[in-house]
Image 1 (tube, rainbow, N blue to C red):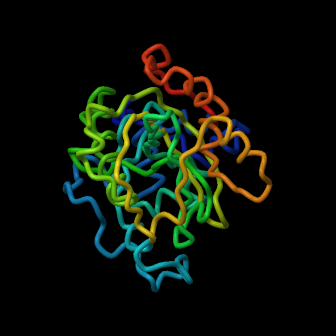
Image 2: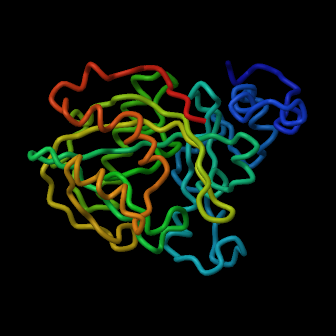
Image 3: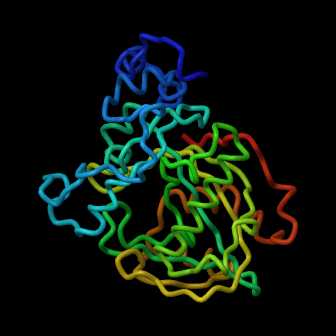
Length: 285
């Protein structure tokens, strides 16, 4: 699939033909995506600036009652993708997380970091109440989005896309958890795989991502940003399984997907993870 292919297929046409959501997304070319979502900035017109000026403001009805800093972050420009993880353009975090757009097939790139200490325990975070999506839920160490800038987007191939996601992961570990780069050098982020998933959040919001999964071994100083993180906890595999059984705890959907499909198999092999590395996109939609 290429972004230059001409197609008259739209998401509404695909839905009318009774196809599945996975087929809907797979059928969208880059041209379809740009036509369906005119707010997406084509790659050739991106400026290299990581945010869109004034696209998300507290006066928007959609943000009523939400935290001003989290609203500002909704101006960040995510990497809009086709089904093959090829960048099509840049779309605001707001645009990419509205469920109505997701149901039409809008897809973006993400990353998930799993940080293990020397004891083999995983650092979890509970997302802050201020978060607009998936607030107060427990999740992996850090999960966010590479931005549509050269350092984080790559050059269209998998190796440079992985490198870009590493840069984004290091940036967000600092922004969310106060973990400085010296504790998490780029070369220590071990890429495992990519998952393609879709999940609703609360009301109008949701996720539809190709998520780059990284594991890193580190013992950092952690100084969490209270606007991002409500709580932290290092857990063993057995402790995490016990948390999943606690009906009072709620977890992000991508975290549960990754744990159920991959993480518990990887946990006993943290020093030998190359056997699990895959360049394929695992489809969980």
